[in-house]
Image (cartoon, rainbow, N blue to C red; front, side, top):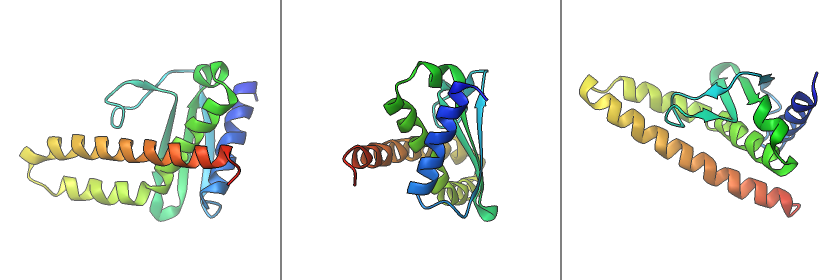
Length: 138
C-alpha cells in the first residue's frame, strides 16, 4: 500500500464516519490510471469517483493516485468529502435516474444533463460547508 493509497484511505474513512455511513460497506481504492467521469464532470478527468448501490449500502470510492500524491492534505480531505457526499446523495441520484429513464427519449438527454449539473453543484456546495465546518472543529 503506497503513500497515496494510505492518505486516500484515511480521508475517505474520516468522511464515511462524519457522514454517518458506518452501516455502509465502502471499498476504498486508488487508481494509477486517470479517472474519467462521463456523467457529472462532463467527461473530464477527475481526482475521485464514487459508485454506489444504495439499496445494499455498498459504495466504491476511488481516488486518482497522481492527484492524491500531488495534493495537500486539505485538498485530499476535500476530494474525499466530495466523493462521500455523492454516496450520501446516492439514493436520490438513483431515483432521479429512474425518473429520467421513464421520460420520452426526446427529453432524456436534456433532463440528464440538467440533473448532472444540479447534482454536482449541490455536492460541491455541501463539500464546502462540511470541510469548512471540519476545519473549524464543529
